[in-house]
Image 1: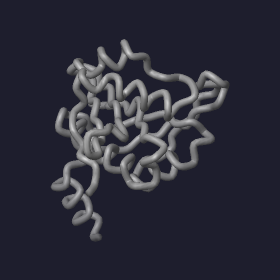
Image 2: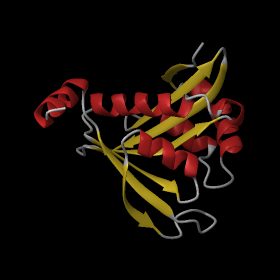
Image 3: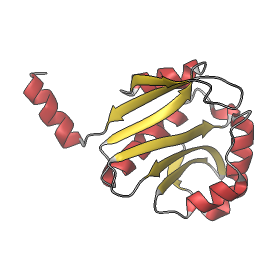
Length: 163
């Protein structure tokens, strides 16, 4: 049975902190930040739940009066990698951002994170830049973006292109 994707609740904070620590060696979100972001209208925090265990999460930040959303973090528990959880979280936060009026999703990804890069490119993201020394260990970041479209506008675009 695939994991259920739902909004994060403040009761999920312990599990989110545990996941953050398991997924990242540095540049981690603090308990306080996770607690604050789960209650903010300017953030979309979704979790993937299998049975009663949180096995992944995605965090998107929104800015008032901007149509750009920023995928700030996406993480999957090591025991759940390779099962499509990250892809499902990504699709779901994209739909949520689009529903909130965002037409573009942007993100930064470690230059050496080939798995995440493959996911983003497979999902329609394109690289548009690079930030040097972006991460705590000096690793560079690649910047990606994707135009978000509703199913109806995607069909109209394909029809106009003759596809």
